[in-house]
Image 1: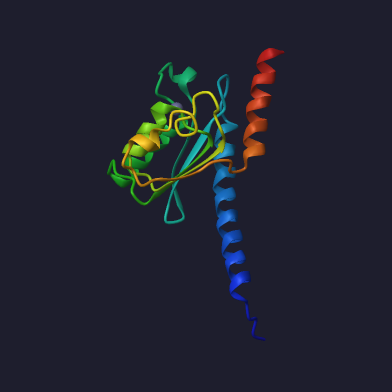
Image 2 (image 1 turned 45 degrees about the vertical axis):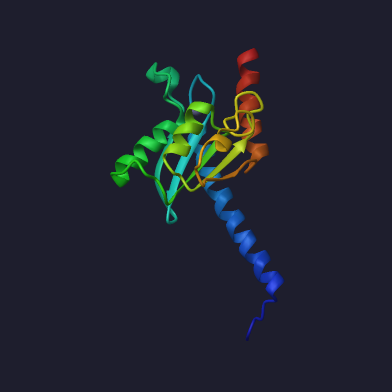
Length: 163
Ligand SMILES: [Zn+2]
């Protein structure tokens, strides 16, 4: 039987496929974030040609080192894997909008697409500091991926701090 798809349903199908892929990698970033102990949960995954080449979570408190944010660690691991600081064909998924330190590293690394979950309305590198506007990076940024889940994870963390 021939299944004829109209152009419109083909586009819809492609969109769903892309959405599923994005959600899938964000779920892996969430799994990373859930391994964080005693600090803000944040997880990151770097994907290249549908392969996960790097993943990490926040370990600042554990490392006692200020740059140990999930994104920085994931970038470092990916650069080791590729033996290159240029991550041109790579996509980064992170549960919380990067801070300006990580945001600038992401722009410098030439990552192609950035997908993040929760928006950081206080320190966000892109929604608040607009780092992408002062860089000639061609990065594409997508916020609010699996946003509810990412927000809930952060809320749980801060609620537990208060009790
Ligand atoms: Zn950061």
